[in-house]
Length: 150
Image 1 (cartoon, helix red, strand yellow):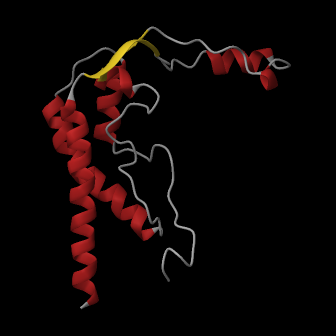
Image 2 (cartoon, helix red, strand yellow; image 1 turned 45 degrees about the horizontal axis):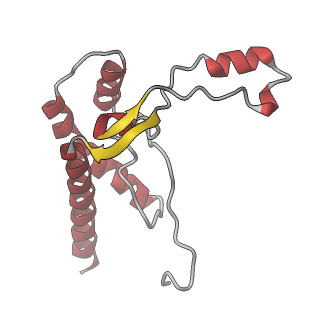
Image 3 (tube, helix red, strand yellow; image 1 turned 120 degrees about the vertical axis):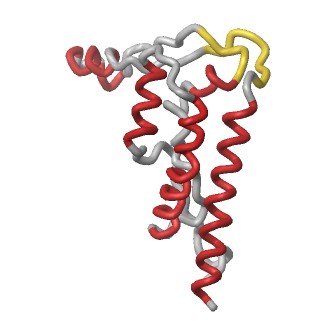
């Protein structure tokens, strides 16, 4: 069945992370400076695994599961110039009748940076690494699938 005959599937958002990758992100969020090279080295096999799981699940348009990013909303601060400060959103209208819940949701320490200056690339290495890891995983899995088809 071709893409013309059906709707292709994908997903948006983070996928579960291996313990070492989650630990790296926790350390960074806590202000530590863990070993970046070791982190990059651990990403390649983790991305391969997450891509393989997506393919087995029938996902057509796979991603790296945002493994290399602490959160999608905050990675711009690490990779791009021009972001800083913090946006503090107002209490959501549906939470106003529930002040205790609104307070607990508001207490989550999630940075929401603002665009405060012209945007420019700060560090291309993480992006280049993300692209290489995803391409390597997809290529390896395609090769193994085509080898199984013969």
